[in-house]
Length: 287
Image (cartoon, rainbow, N blue to C red):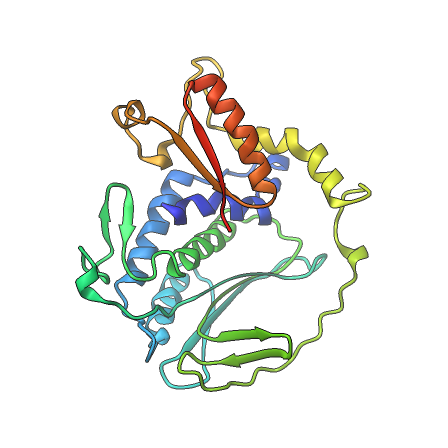
């Protein structure tokens, strides 16, 4: 499921390096996966079709989850029923805060086009089906699970990490940015100017980010396969994929969709898969 696949990525962006430097516990991704799917199922079952939205119901659901962990979370309503939830994990302030966010509303449903209940959170074939599972309740669930893991594992943070589940729309045009609710009514938010300079961006002593990425590739590969390859048995562990050996044997081709840097990585993957698995691979642009 997409939600589960986002968890290692989000943790690596925020706090995973801390686990390699300390003796603290590492994330249990199998358990985190199940919990994230449960969070997603709970959100999908709350009908937040816009209009009218009713995001407050979903925000209250998330607030209860955070409350059980002892994490304070506030809900702000600019209008009745259109709630935004905010929670914060404090860091030491050495770096600028990081925002994990997603929206809670979903678009309308044509029920005759669905083979399952769009608000039933039905799990079939390793996928959870429901309105908003991809846009954007899946993203909200992954962000919340990451937020919970950082809290439970007491990850040292150099910055505040903020979780935001919101209900605004932003229209970007050459003339500027217009904020509105999901019925098109304009809303106003206070403007905050962030003092930022490219010099503040971390390049780790390298001249530019591309050079940094090139030299970090060996470590990135090691981190990616950490816990995935049995050093003695040679076995590969990919439990999250939920694909049986029989289904693997039925594969006849592999298609990879990527864009930008990931497209170049996909080309390398194409070479390796075709060489090792003797299976044709097609790489397509994702946008």
